Length: 348
Image 1 (tube, helix red, strand yellow):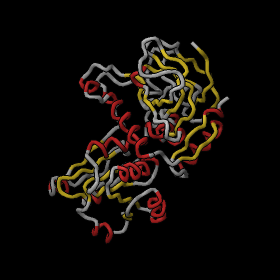
Image 2: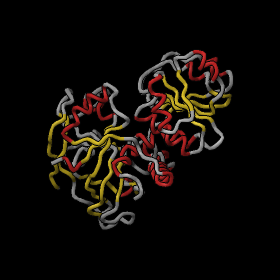
Image 3: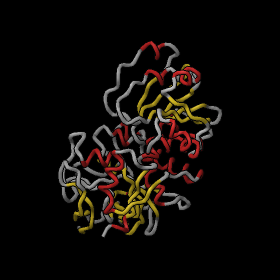
């Protein structure tokens, strides 16, 4: 076992401080990597503040990891020293249940092991994430990162990228379709980029007129201001698919009206109760409201390959490790365009 430098929250006050952790020795099917960049997800902030009531301290967040392979176990066949690789939200699963057999390891019937704050037999008894110098992960949960992608910009693809790619992919977004992306933030900006790359006419749907220019610069073909009742009427029944990235409970009924018949709105942001849904809006037009959670390993690799082909990365602001507390405060104030990424060389 090796001790390495990290940053951890030690209590619900969420204050991130330097911390030393241990990683397990490399086993036969393990890959060890030095972490180059780690994205800052809003989930990290929720976890360090114990907003979901399941945090165990000390807690080392980070599940948008880009690194270089430094060592591989004797049974590893997919990776070699020096490879650029990624680690996302998962580091283990049973790989033997129906969900895992369907390449849906995030829905493992026997509980997936998340990259941080999950029970483990590793040192410390809980998984420690990417706010650290290195990590050891079994080969099956390591992903190949296309060499043409900017490494820092690629980090958020491991969560924000797959969270938005998966529903766009699963619901068959393609050229000739009209897609609405609801909410312009860390998820929404990736939704725009990916929908555009898939060839769809892409409309940013937002309450804020000030975000219209940003949406266009990201590639959106049009902007719909959802607080404008006349505009909402104009766009009624015009969308083949809606990607809803709003991160809190809200009234989804006005958005359902935007769907064509036999079309779907997929929620990827709000993991809490929603306001009452008017069943008549679903029955009339045979419309669907669905949800989606990240993606399995195969689909995440497909997403990275797609992004490599289309040169899609996240729009980021790089920060030093020592700036993480300020970054968390700015995230709470929605003061980031559109993801923070930690340069791990700044971690001593």
